[in-house]
Image 1: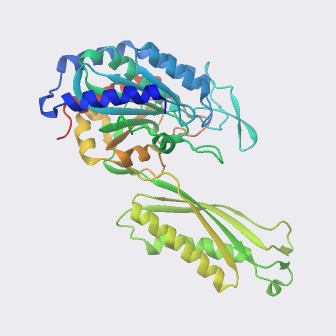
Image 2: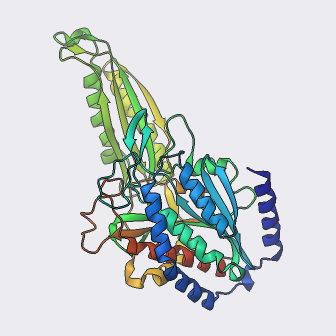
Image 3: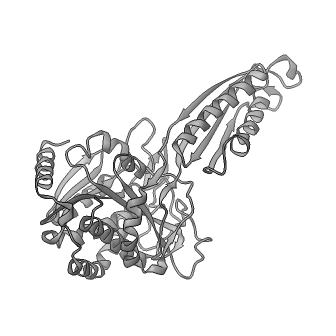
Length: 441
């Protein structure tokens, strides 16, 4: 962390702690109205940012141009900007003219190794290297929209800084899709490098564009909202033999097949499905090279998703127990390696409830919906482990398309109805202002 940033944040903390009295803060209705007008006025600029990011996507931990553009825009808004956090992350601090809490707003920056199939004037032609192979690169998950929306919020709030009751931390985070193999990155690395050490926000907000919601609709869920995501690798060791004499060896393929079936009983017969849902899927089995040779070993790869940290740990124990005992019953052995991914994304219930009126003001009461659990995962969850957080969803599928049939996030055909972007700006702006104006006791 740069010394300049450390001094700046320390001064900010002292100033906030010495003058802030939560009981003295009241909502500024004229300010809210002015910010609403500003959101409409900058819609074209937000769309232009989004198209620029979309046309120039960069993979995780490689967001060099993206970071430079963001830092320049935030600097032009008169903010204190720090760069190079977790490799390419950008953080800006906006101190309001009135005392109040510290609110963090986050957008992710990285694109995916996906070759775009949309025919757009600003379609991505970019390529990059992923796992040693050249691939197309596309903002197939909507992070281009997230960055543009957050820049719009920054433009909005910075124009009214003297009237803001508190401080806003704008976090542009790299590598949400996962750091390249052998590297670290994302939200966890930002925190490990001291993001919240000198200036710790009281709350954090973020949003994600979502294909299964109509454009302009906001979705939310209190408590667990998105699953944890872990991966496992099992290597079954048998003993090679000719396929015509299986009794002369130990067949790891048959053992692997039995383990697959055994693992499925964890979800269907061992964990309490009335408590929380969970998912266990085997995505790869590799072993052998010839039809009449039983190999020495078989590798299995899979994923585990859950919505409760205790259940998450319990499933891990059951995976190991199931695999080891099935292998032993056949005279084989098995290596079990479980790699922890993102934690459960848990929306603070009080913060969620407090923010709902702001979302309804941003999108209209009929356009704010409670969502079902999502088995996808988000590293926004690391921020939520440190401070109360609320992560919600912005529909981006145009009205002439059935959201349930629209190409999903991560598809090479994923598209965004840009009319939804200004709703995202309004939602994050109003969420931040609502919290700053009336923070919890």
